[in-house]
Amino acid sequence: MACVGCSCSTSKDSSAPGGCSGGCASGGCNRHNTYDWITAMGIRDPAPFEFVEVNFKNGSRKEFFKNPPFTRASTGDWVIVESASGGYDVGKISLSGELVRLQMKRKRVRIDAKLQAVVRKAHERDLERLDEVRRQEKAVMVQARAIARALDLDMKVGDVEFQGDGRKCTFYYTADGRVDFRELIREYAREFKVKIEMRQIGARQESARIGGLGNCGRELCCSTWLSEFKSVNTAAARFQNLAINQTKLSGMCGRLKCCLNYELDTYIDALEDFPDRAEKLRTAAGLAILVKTDVFKRLMFYTYAENRGKFFPLHVDQVWDALDLIKKGELPVSLEEILSKTPPKEEEPEEDEPDYESVNDVLELPLEKRKKKKKKKSKNRDRSQSAAAAVEKAAQEDTAKAGTDKPGGGRRDPRGNQRPQQQRNNPGKGPQNRPDGGKPNQQRPQNAGNKQEQARPKPDQNNKPKPEHPPKPRPENKPKSETPPQAGDAPRPNNNRRERWKSKNRGPKKDA
Image 1 (cartoon, rainbow, N blue to C red):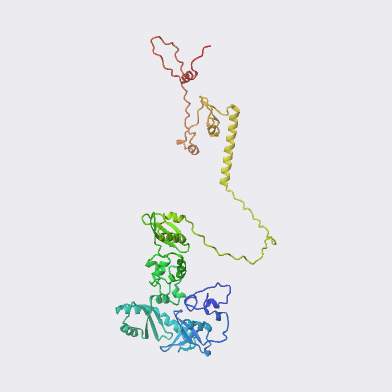
Image 2: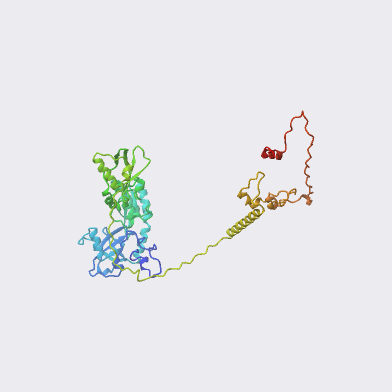
């Protein structure tokens, strides 16, 4: 929301995005600003109000002044106002008309009170003078802190504000107790040669004047919209089941966060249904203690004091039933038994039926035709599928040929057992797939199984061809001597394995 009178709200370009562009006179559109919606909408008050609200130094200070009709000043105008200490000050009108009456009633300022008046509208020379004195404030604040430290005063100068004419300077400081700054004022007057005013503020007021970002990522509430400070204590954190950690509960000012009070009323209303003294529950299985409470789910987590390994989420109604049972003098058996009892269901409010008429039978909307997206198949996937199909086809052909050769559908081992189906259907183990073509007594090429060595031929030394070695002849089987054994010789062992296998399987000969 743009503040009235800034470049964000008065830009004529409708295509420009809304929001603050940083050109506001108050330093930002959300820094203790007030939105005069009556003036922004162009509505004229039927009964004009003679008071206006004027803010100073980016909205850090606001006061009410009388606005005579001859000034013709309205919301958003820079004006020259009278100062109570003498001279004049420069500020900006933030509210005018009937809204000022409501603000004065809210801040308890009487209409018949003696207030200063608006002198006239400010011109360019007044604004240039204001910018000159505003540029000196930072250097003056650093020098003022050094003087206070030299005098060994327990105080901190937080902000410095010059009057519009440069004749007066206000020093805002924080201190734990009262400070005797009579000598300090003499040093400030001798050094800065202006009228000195010392004003003590609290830590929260200091953060409101300086500004900053909280750990939530937003601007500080006290520097943007919060105008009244309420006391905050640790009881607000206990009601919300927050850990009492001072570093996490403290804000930029070092005090407890103001946002702890925002949801406190909601938690207090939700905790009215919870039992007050339910930190301990006595059961026959042992003493149970309360670990944590989920306020909005209405659950209370218990565990045994002796064995804290398991947590039991009990509903509020289940805890009330257990407490009533304990008051009667009976102890629940265990937390498991309490948890097994189903809590009563909460009655949901009945929803009123809508008053509109059903048009399902009158209007029929056409169905949308959804286009099916074609899946893009990758080239690698197509290649792998085609290779797998070729291997499977070759395997089927091999099995068909093997089935036509023998009635058993496959080769048999010497014992007559048929080979397993996986070995018969494997096309890579057949004799036709050997490098030598399955022919016996034929020399196989060297390094037939090593594919990498075949792919990379080794260069011959001196380009000389290697001599081919003829295959070694196999030793011929010599015929055994057929001399019959004599009577005194020991029986010779039968070294022929085939003959031994035949004699073992044939058994004794049957008589004809």
